[in-house]
Length: 349
Length: 170
Ligand code: SF4
Ligand code: SF4
Image (cartoon, rainbow over all chains, first blue to last red; front, side, top):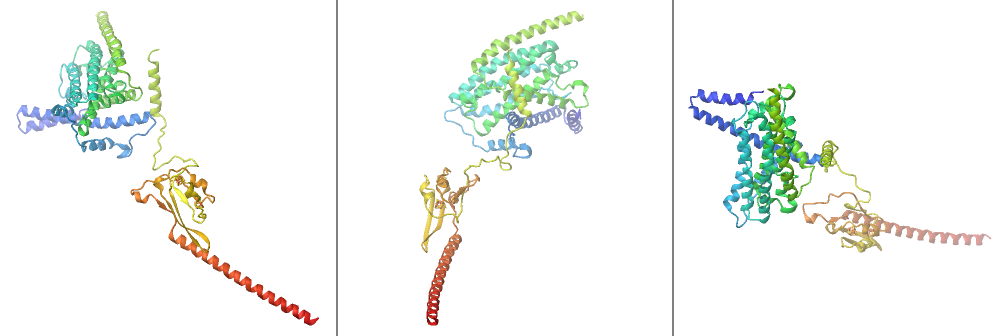
């Protein structure tokens, strides 16, 4: 169980090598297989997350949620996606057609690119980048540009307002998000995601960095544009923000990409703060990748729980909260962490 | 303390998450309807006296009453209820002196065709039966009257005879 995926990849590699293919071709094919596997994993999770979100929201509101399509309504998302695919793609007048259509195509790119470096289990990482954290932050913020493209090319005032909010919100919340991660990086001294996980062997960083975890959680909610920070698509004010003009598959892509981002931030949270694929209490008979999935889904549940509890806040409140509360707190956290680490090391030596 | 309200909110929602759900799965289960619910109308042919009061009471001209006079008696030959215009106000029910029009609690009134939404309550055989009944009753009555008249004449005759006999005997 533990090594099922690693062995499968190794098996493919051996098979290809014994078939007499050159090394480069073998590498290429194996990597392609791995990336397709990650793609399938992400898409399946995204479909499941849409269903889960609807169920969680229903349960919190004393409802039952989708329960007609398939057993327990499991095929609801598939039905919805098929419906969206079959719809006409409407391109409004005076839009920049190429960019308008390019935006939904590109929206999946940043999260997918980040999944390439995330460790899914022990030894289960497609590219073990030694600047993984940096790569994550750099790529994740690319979504801003793409959503801005969507809003700008739609040639619609609501879209433009929404995408301006995206830029303001994402750029602002990137700062506390980054600063909260710095605390973890200070403790481990590495930017490699696998390295960060293995250094949590004795204690998870959520216990050493509770404040950083809290800041990360809040910033992650804002980064994924979810309530209470979903001003980007504040329905009561700007319809659906940058996605107003999109129909059919274009809208479906943005919608599903939101869940890919949720999966991503939850994954990073469990890697940085919850010990990644490390098993707690020595329960190592459960495979590492199942542990990671459990932690990721715990994080996702918390995000959904937050979403269906709090109302949307005002944009000025949101910006003030970021710059006046989160950023100073994150900086204080870094200072305390640095001093603590220094003291700890000087005491130990 | 700052954030107390936030935690309280989270506590409430997680309670709801695990709590009892209030959805009723409609086609399989239904909520009980109140007694005075106005659903699909129902018409009782035998009670109706064709007085036309319901037709006059209706604000929307929903009801069309067809009548005929058989043997000096009014017979209902048609009672068309054009349901699409009915606003379920119940004025017709209120106006009816014989409770011949009532409302059930069946609220599933949708149809696939506009033409099928009106209801014709009276069936031709009901009318035929009624007319037959009335005619029979009238015939019986006539017969009875005739018979009664005859017996009356007879008794009168016998009476006369008896008196003459008495007179003769005396
Ligand atoms: S319920 Fe009201 S609208 Fe409907 S038939 Fe009776 S009187 Fe007319
Ligand atoms: S008011 Fe009642 S008795 Fe009179 S015609 Fe209407 S249904 Fe018949």
